[in-house]
Image (cartoon, rainbow, N blue to C red; front, side, top):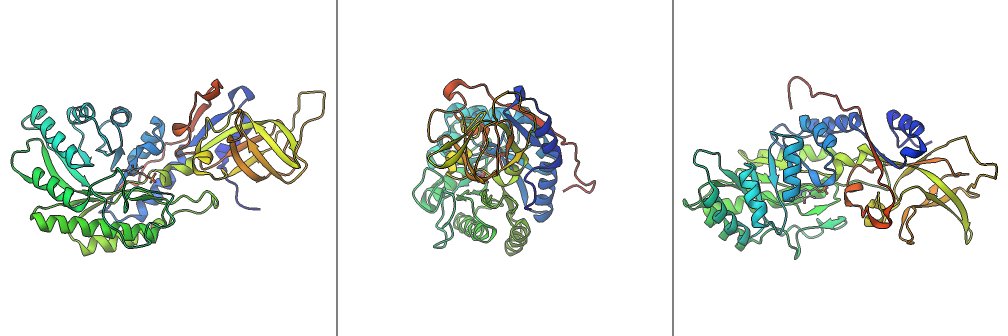
Length: 414
Ligand SMILES: *Cc1c(COP(=O)(O)O)cnc(C)c1O
């Protein structure tokens, strides 16, 4: 038997939620905090851990992560306002292409600690707005230039998404970054301070490849700093730590990554390295719990239709994978007619949408799966509900349960 995909608390919830409460997103915040503690412990003390809020911005998730993180990465004005309200007092870094003047004014007014500038135009806009809105005596907003450096051939191969190392809307090339730094390092920039370099080049990489990415970013930052004789003490090396949906028990090798970052930091004394994982922090703490409405035989295969679908859990449709899932059997059957059940061991699980794309998992091992049984989809804690086209077909939205979450970091701090 492979280990269960459910924590004991989630299993109890999956058994006790009533039909009327399904589908339901269940988050195990204690499991989240234990995972975050493991990640934090694997990273050197000198490396800052930010959480990329767009992976899962639920307030309860942000609050649960706050004690283990040094700050939050936000990628829009909306996220900025939301995260600031959810975890007041925690440092924010504002990234994202196409920031509007309104968003930048709001960020400056909110006293956001860091802005990751995506282009020369954005730096010019920031300078103009900061000059207008600067309050003397207030700590300057630290600006990190987002770059899109060249990386060694093959480094980004196999990533799920690539934001860099090729033409994209993200970050600046070496010349553009150089010009941006020249503008920022001038003494006519009240309210802004050039602080470093940031990049987020790919999503879904293993530790070895991400370390090569980090090295390339650090080298590009050192080069820029040398060329301008300007200290750039902060280097954000992004997120993108892999989550393997085909092997839900596996985890990104945080120990190897932490060891490698430690070695990198030692080669560049005085550097403040920052990582900003999203998916690899929260994916494992969320489950989408639902029930089988119908089971049918279609052209020689078993198909189970569950309450809800990819309009709630878009992850398998967006990534083209089978969402890992486990069946929680329910023995009662309220009807006098026979209970629909799967004939084979393998079942395709779909949702209620009137489109053949509404597939949550193909070939789920679920011998004898019956209408009324519960299906619990795991690894649904990142890029799940918040990326879903929730209003399509006007089904009721899922419920939300947040379990536990009162762990505290060790007294020595981290
Ligand atoms: C999305 C994003 C992240 C997080 O990426 P994951 O693949 O979820 O780890 C980090 N930094 C930036 C700038 C992002 O846009």
